[in-house]
Image 1 (tube, helix red, strand yellow):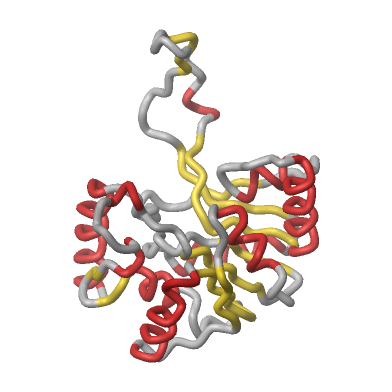
Image 2 (cartoon, helix red, strand yellow):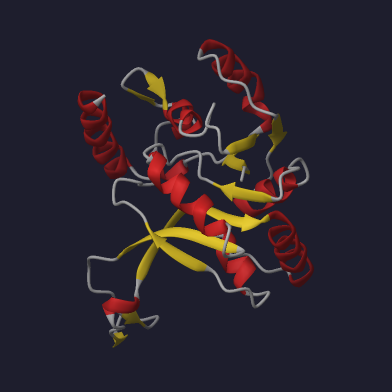
Length: 228
């Protein structure tokens, strides 16, 4: 069984405060985006890679792909928001199955990709996640705690998020018609009534979003370099 991969990498990373797209920041000599692409490139279970980028950065991305000898099946112009970018990218996929994975999430382990593909032979929608460690509070607009959810049922959801392509396309079509904006792809699929299954992932599979994340990413990157 093979699967297509859609990587949204069009975000500006304003929270990072770098002055440029965080996905071009170097970890151990390579841009974050290149590390992410290498998780999927030349893997036998990956059928195609679609990369969605900011139109103004397309030339730079093409240059990086040449420099690091990586080829993708399409480089697609992104939209103003992540959801719009993924919607653009879906039109270029031909595989029966698709994984959507954040461009700024470079520490995905190969075993988790394999686990997702195994589960896609049983389910139509599977995502990675990890149990949360901290206590979570629900608060009102004035900052007062309303309640404390049971932590046992709370998971932080990661990417890749894997789906039958036809279902994900239908979910995006419905979201667009309903003017619904979700925080991840699974939230759109859930609205179709499709059961989304969660596989336990890895706490190292972080999305690099803030300067603090960058400190953690450097430590993980150093560890991976030592192990390899």
